[in-house]
Image (cartoon, rainbow, N blue to C red):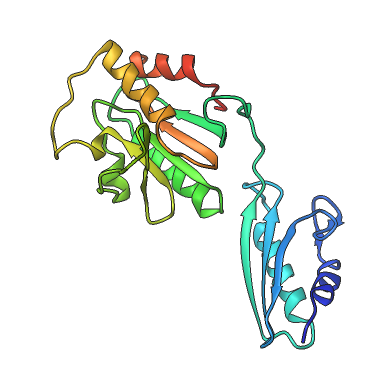
Length: 231
């Protein structure tokens, strides 16, 4: 049977072209599992979600593991390290980074950009949440195909919806009948945003993307005053 040490020994010959160190020394190899029938499963943790050498490293790791005598198949999972920008003592303790998507006016593709950003981050292995703070036009659930009402956990916690890519989604649109308009101002908008931030069970997230309403109204001000933004 192939041993884990044999796998790691082969991987020590795989160098990161930018950092000039092998992937084992860099701590990029995680969760190596070898089955009796010669199947190997492992995780490659990239140093950044935007790693330009991703494809090169993936191929090199697979080739190195496949070259070990006795290995019949390789299942490689790829994730990425995400640096925490939000302080752990904030109200969103499990969220590492919060990114707000805003626009000066409506109809310019803001929500589409927010969905594409969240989807792209999830596609490279990041844990992502998407908060639809556009109270007046909550379109995110329909764009992601998340139409199930969220469920309560205890007295003051809500489970977010989950998209097909595993993106956690929360939106006023999940609670309203189709096409029902929302005519809220001031305290009602601020209260809804704070509830979505503090009472939703976001869990551990690398990124929380927030889709804001057009302009610089109550939702944008509430978000800026309540939580630290990464970008």
